[in-house]
Each structure stands twice: as C-alpha cells, then as structure tokens.
Image (cartoon, rainbow, N blue to C red):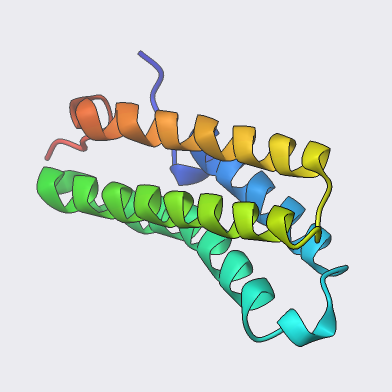
Length: 126
C-alpha cells in the first residue's frame, strides 16, 4: 500500500485540480452577462471539489469528519455536472469539450466514492 505524504499526492486531487483549471480556462470565453451567474457558479463548484479534498486530508484522524468532507467534495462535483450541462445547453462549449470535462468529473466522483466507501486506506492512526 502506497503511503501518501499529502493530499497533493492523491490522484483524485490532481484530477480535481486539472478539472478546475480547464473549467477556468474555458469559462474565460463565456459571455460577459454570465460573469456573476453561470461562470461564477461553475468555477466555484469546480474549485470546491479539490478544496474539500485538501480540507479532508488533515481530518483523517477523525474518520467520520474525513468522510464528511469527501462527501462535500462529491456533492460539489455533482453540481459541476449540472453547470456543464447548462453550459452545453447554451452552446457556451462544444459537445467535445463537455464530454471531456464531464468524463473527467465522473472519474473524480468514482474515485471519491471509493475513498468514501473505504476510508480506512487513508485514515491516519495516532
């Protein structure tokens, strides 16, 4: 079993970070009237996925708190799905862009689900 030195070593965190960067870059091209609505919402939600993983990491000593933050991260990832679908519906992104981001996000959600189901792999012991 691999020993993790920090949340940045987690593949799920790396993918969440990648997703938030890609979404930020893509939303730079969204219409200015979406700045305080859709653009802000999708950026905030995508950034929260990785932020909640990072926040969960020091809580590993408390399994229920650790899992609760991972569930928060997963909930934010599901919210990202909604904003991606809405962005596609308004033609702010291509089907290919949507597919790439949606699939990456689903992969993150599956990894989070695995961590939630088997937190003992990550729990820090005293």
